Amino acid sequence: MNRLWTGNFILASCVNFIAAMMFYLLMTSMASYAIREFGAGQAVAGFASSSFILGAVFSRMLAGKYMDFVGRKTLALVSMIAFIVLGAAYIPVDNIVVLIVIRLLHGAAFGLNNTVLSAAVQTMIPQHRRAEGTGYFGMTVSLAMALGPFVSVVMSQKYGMFWVFVVCIVLSTVGTLLTLFLKVDERTPSREEQLLKWKFHITSFIDPRALPIASMMALCGIAFSLVLSFLEGYSHQIGAAAGASWFFIVMAACTFTSRLFVGRIQDTYGDDVVMYPIFVLMAVSYVMLATAQGSGMVIAAAVPLGLGFGSVMPCAQAIVINQSDASRYALAVATFFILLDTGTGLGPVLIGGLANVWGPRSMYWAAVVLVACAAVVYVMTTRRQRRPE
Image (cartoon, rainbow, N blue to C red; front, side, top):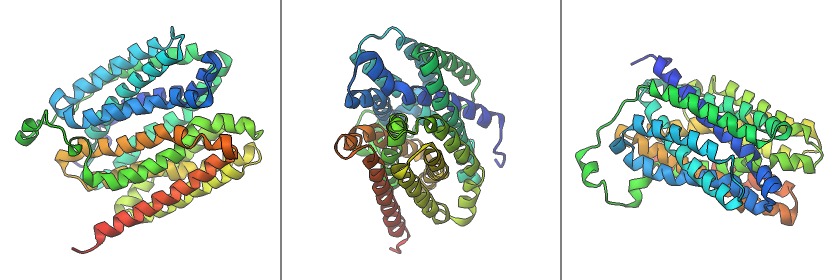
């Protein structure tokens, strides 16, 4: 198979875009909604936002092990139907605890859907175009990253969260219909997997070979979560409120642009050629945010972050897939996203408190340190793998 742009690949990308849109629509405004609607404090509001991701982590652990027993198409369809039900469940909520429970369940459905799609799409991509195809598939997330936060901020401020929830329900319905036509290559579990079906070990949920790069992504996820959860409030605090909505559009445009070529460069010249500049770009962006004095600097910081964080996801995912056997693709993808989601989910809770002690800028200085640590993990991992035995 040499063709990349098949109808099935395009259909899978559309479903991925819809799921990502719902993620960004709700993630961007949920903390502010919890504070405004339920009087939640900063920590509780942050958890109301990030609990979605923690739900995704739990479901990814199960999806990596059991998706081939249940069926990939079945899980993709069930998770999309769950999106419709849970999108409607937000509307009557009048209690912060119930909101968090719905966020956890919604995140679990998202984790199932994303893990299944990310594993299934790898069978649609020619092996010699792995990084390129993964990058193009990830461009749907870039588009959602631009539209989701912008639509969320505008709609929640002008019309209220009710209409944000309605948009999520409509998108979920469209996604369900598209999934019905998606052709997914099913995989029959091996005899060994059948015997170990109900036996649990850490390797049942985590692929050890994917763990180093996934750990690197956890650090990047913690840093990025500080933008995702707190940039709107931070921009108001530093007098740059106009920069918040445009930040995500500029970042997504740069991410979209980088994914047009970064995969080809990685496939042709190797991982280091793209990974080292990625770390530099992310660090530069967080320094710009930490020192920003107005909307112009906030928006400008979106350029290196879009080029950096927007590229690290498909590039690192391609590394993980190339290190894995075909029978372990699902588990490798699950491991990658489990750690990325864990970092993104816990970041606002772990690092967000710095703002109360050392001021809001301290969060983005912490992000610089996290990126430096991620770079060290990458260097140590690649050197160990290349060392002759």
